[in-house]
Image 1 (cartoon, rainbow, N blue to C red):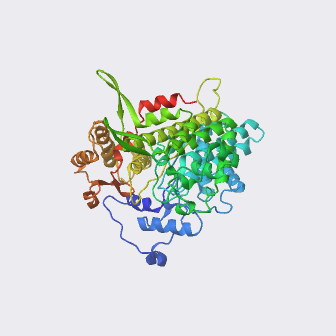
Image 2 (image 1 turned 45 degrees about the horizontal axis):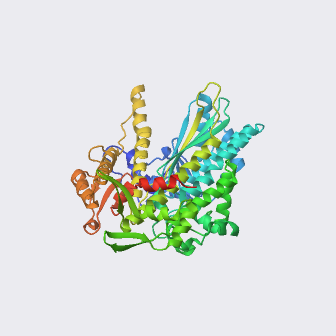
Image 3 (image 1 turned 135 degrees about the horizontal axis):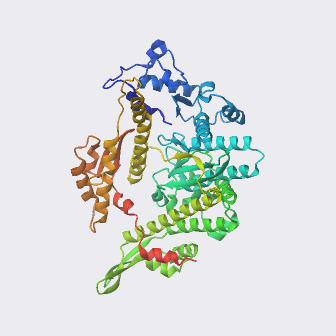
Length: 573
């Protein structure tokens, strides 16, 4: 699914080679320049230009018709509201019973989901639904809508099979769990996915849903320790601080969200989250999250342990350090031992060990081992690295435990069941200040766009040629140059960044110089004027230009947790 800005950039691909469509203003369109606006399938537009495509989407959006076809592709414009009847049981029944779902009914994401299910049952081959678009386009909601459709059809057609009902109920409960731990409120979106996921819904030979499996990618762990202005940490941290009972709050020694460094010390009025959001009520979010965990087979003890780890991560953020001059140089120590004690209690480690491991390193040398004292800045980096590692391990454990519950049992033949896969990744992002996180997100979307191009254009053209079908070649934008700029094994951005991080004295200016030298002639790479004061570079992605601020790139790419802290946590009780 795509919102209008990416479509506006991509739609000239449908024109003739080198042809730039003439501009057409809204008045011309309304007076007869476009006679077929509000068109269900834009393949049937008599005039196909960026303007007519966007106008058609605008008209349909104003008529509360969020879905539009381009052949068998569904374009979704986010209405930011639930439209009455659009996802009702009656609508699900209609799309599940139609003989030709694309011809007989109005455009809907249900049609794509129905088509995937039909092909799976008819051909006994796995299918995948790709959902892409910029941040806030509604990808996560449409993923849930697809899953709800499949669950409803499954339980309706096989209502007498209790096992099917139980399986689908558990699979659906992975949504609130992953949203709580993997999504956050940003300035663009109240429920922005900060990770990618590919969920496989498994079916047996009779078309019964027998389980699922979830793969996750690129959790934005840096959000644990810092967020941009007006944004929030992952939902679960705010739900914990505002949603637990008084007894649990006392046991975990919790304070309000605005008291924590890792939550930005911001009150509810200082973030962009709307009061009408499903994530504004901390008590409801916490209840929804714990209910999902229990449905997925977690015990009450597991829920308490998870809450304890979350509280421990928040306490780590309260650790501050000070430097003192000694005969051996500067030595750093925690500012407040009471904070160290609270954090160590939550993490199940000795407070003196935690204090020592945060401020020193035990290093091997040819003549033995010796202790290196860290600077205040290095101590803060060690603290943040531990917090990110703890949350990342917790997230992976939750997904693994959920998979144990929802994964299908092995068949008698040992063959893997066919599946319908739904890919939902974080959307393309371009903010006022973009950093390493946005580069990773936009790189993933760039690769996804290449896959989309290959499937929609290149593969279709190859089929025409193989079958001898007469056709006129369609020129489309190939983003291989942008992917090469980022991922080339010799001179790509990520390769150069890794090389600089491996140097003992690597610097961001050194990386910037190498990047300019390697990619300076690439037409998709440029250095903005702002780079004279703050090092930055611009990449022209398929969806538009994005300028990346290099501040923190090396630290975020390294994200190194020292072995001393790993050893400390391995002994946690």
